Length: 257
Ligand code: OAD
Image (cartoon, rainbow, N blue to C red; front, side, top):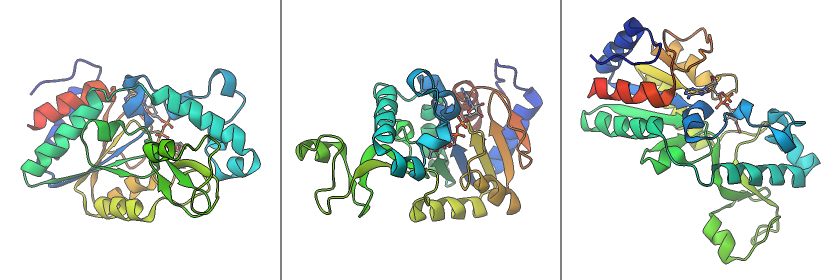
């Protein structure tokens, strides 16, 4: 079995491979760390320069949007610019390949992501988008979602308003203080209640309810594997692969083939 060239404990790597080979239902939860090697700063790294005086939790909150919408929208546009030219990295590709491999073997791999950068989809994966997507706009009033091409066709300059009800358009992502999309949450919750293994990758596991999916899986008897160069010490984790997602995942997925 190939072993990672990072500092990952080979016993832990072997344990992860054995566990995953026996698993029929796998749930994978990803966070900002999966996109770090694409050049996108992780969520809690992001606020540099112009935005250094803001707390990250503030700028992605409904309270901030209600108080100072222009600042919040400007910050989201800046965030969009940061990710506009970024490409999926080895971790995104390995996860998409793993999902196809699992399906071909009659297994299920439910990929659930907190990321709003669309890089999992760009790599060809089917993703449960827990926090929505920065690629779309949504009406704050009626909830209607618009694709960028639609907005361009309507010649709506920011700050744009909804052509149906006049409400303010905003990024179609979940902010602090808002509910997760019910359909995405139900799909994720079901996958975690039924999975044999949950793999948590590149998330600090502090933002709920997404982080609670790890506990749901554990509570229903799943083994929990974490891939993170700075392990989070989450109590539910059974096996830690302390390396970068873009290095660990290709090795892991190849070992499972
Ligand atoms: P965080 O920024 O909180 O955590 C990123 C995690 O990735 C940290 O634990 C890092 O150690 C780890 N990491 C860094 N580089 C990595 C690499 N190359 N490979 C693997 N892991 C790496 O991001 P999230 O946990 O995703 O919500 O944050 C959760 C949510 O908080 C976000 O979705 C965002 C924010 O509120 C919204 O915007 C709604």
